[in-house]
Image 1 (tube, rainbow, N blue to C red):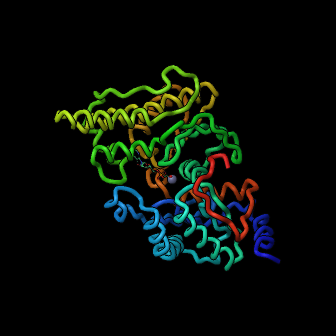
Image 2 (cartoon, rainbow, N blue to C red):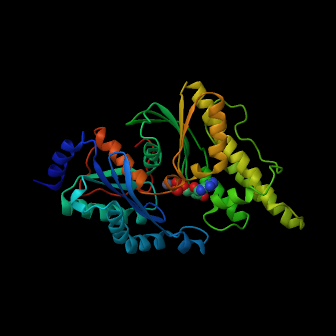
Image 3 (tube, rainbow, N blue to C red):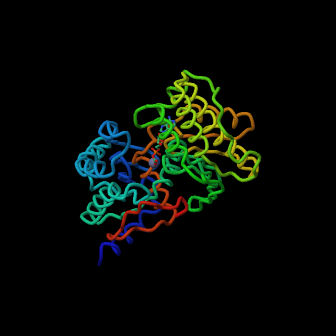
Length: 353
Ligand code: KG4
Ligand code: ZN
């Protein structure tokens, strides 16, 4: 029998196993990560970050990211097994991010996971990175069940998803241009802040006031879409104008004003969507989800109108493999398919795929 046939037979037997053991690998950008879950419990979550390597270039250099994944991945997987106190024999299924992300970076994780799956005969589960971000919330709150609304705010995506069921995600609002995280990173660069920019803008904003004018996209329009290029351009123009005229300005006020509008837009749209769809639980997913203003504003607004708010701990907001293990577990338990050994990586994957 082929790998695919034997792995599928194993997978069918594992679907109802309560304490399913998942090993998952993530390499979509500049974190090489491996995590192990047993049932709902995250046993290990190893992340080898390349931030220091890419900082001097002001952003991720794809080729350098791929090379560093190649060098790190074996150690990261071994460390994850050691932290969980497990051997490969005890693992039931192998999950891996197949997209979206940097193609060369994804291929390292996918190839490593395929080799492991083929050598051990264990089922290989391909995971959509953005669905992984959403699934981080099942680790934070194991009792979370659809339906709920998810605000997805990462470096590549900003969207509001209506999660109708474990295998049914509907996008009801999305950015029509830049993703929120991307805008944070570009604003950080314009302010001369180091990579990664989002957390640096947040830090600087604490020292400022929201006194710089920021446009309000889609004022009084009825949809739930976002636009970030207008406020990003407003920041760039403000800085250029002041520098050309040799006028002093407060970088902290710029950071604070940008952050207030960027986060306010997400909070307003998500709250309006929850009310209009009569949804009582909101969850937050993605790297921008670690922003304290976003977490606090959402909590305050939800608290005031009886909506549950759930967000993952900081370590599960930015890229990690715990969230990939969580989504792989959800897929196995809800009839998701085993991948064959010709699984390919994909740079762009829709949230609903
Ligand atoms: O989800 P993520 O780790 O990677 C992607 O899948 O894209 O998100 C990374 C993005 C970056 O744009 C980063 O600047 C942003 O999340 N980010 C933040 C914060 N921490 C990370 N943005 C605003 N405030 C933060 N505290
Ligand atoms: Zn991510």
